[in-house]
Structure formats: structure tokens, C-alpha cells
Amino acid sequence: MKNVILTIALFSITVLASAQKADKQTITIKTQIYCSHCLQCGSCGANINDHVRDANKGISKLDIDPKANTITVTYDANKTTPEKIREAINAAGYDADDKKATAETVNKLDGCCKKH
Image 1 (tube, helix red, strand yellow):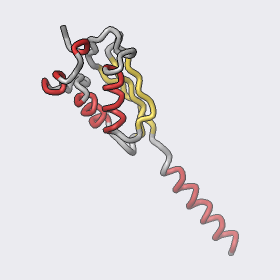
Image 2 (cartoon, one colour; image 1 turned 120 degrees about the horizontal axis):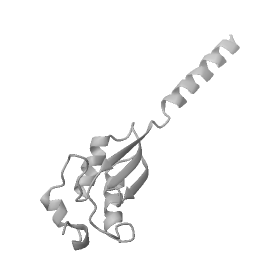
Image 3 (cartoon, helix red, strand yellow; image 1 turned 30 degrees about the vertical axis):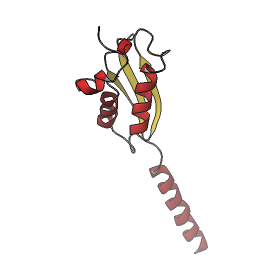
Image 4 (tube, helix red, strand yellow; image 1 turned 90 degrees about the vertical axis):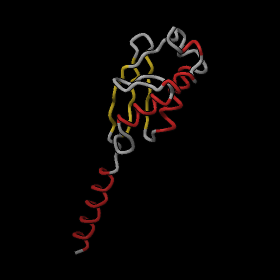
């Protein structure tokens, strides 16, 4: 009887532990980055990074590629969604795929980050 109870308890713990594992997903979002020094600039790359991480729990990796005009995000699908990530990129003042940033958020960008 003890063995049956112990087996059931171990099985339950294993199932619960596996259910709580992060569901890691990666998404690459097209954007327009006009700043030629985006990743060195204290405002450009940090702006995107801070907005996305602050608005989305579960972000484990964020890579900005200004040459390819992409932002690649690895995230926990149990904690955020691609739509929320796109909204955070828009809030930073950048387009995210077909979702355009508002004029208000773009106007908050440094001059080097705006389309010339």
C-alpha cells in the first residue's frame, strides 16, 4: 500500500513539474531601424529592450539586428504573446511587422532614430 501511494505521489509531482516548464518560443519581428549606431546608442537599443522586457514577463532573450531590421525575441508562451511583444515594440516608437507605431511614440524617439 505504501508503494502505491508513493508511486502516485511521485507521478503527481512529475506531472506538475513538467506542466510548469517554460514553453519557450522565438519570434522574429520586422521593423525599421534608421539609427546607424542603434546598439551603441544609450537610447535606441535600450529603448526597445526596456519597453519589451518591462511590458512582458518571460522574455529570456532579445536580439536587435539593425542591418536586417529585425527584432528576435525568445519568450515563455505561458507568460506573454507575440501580440503583446509587438505592442511593446510599438510603444517604444517602432513598427512591429504590419503594426505601425503611432506618431506620438515616434516623436518621443531621439532624432537619430527617426526616418530622415
